[in-house]
Length: 106
Image (cartoon, rainbow, N blue to C red; front, top):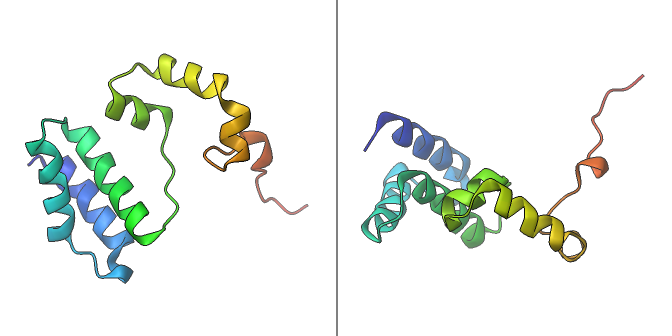
């Protein structure tokens, strides 16, 4: 396992440690993805996705993350998002940037 992947898994384990998740758990989930033939980046994203579902924790996935998992280009992912934007916003799957205002008191 590459050091960069290990560092990402360490960060994920720290984030989910309050639920009893350990680095060993993250490595096990990661390795299950690798054994199924997915690439390293997709396997790390899969760890985040699996843990977020298991512990009902909000995770943010970028278009690049989705593309790494689906094998599509970022442009294809963005096109799918744009085509289904209204429904995705309605169901809470995406958050519009315009609704996320920075907090800078004046």
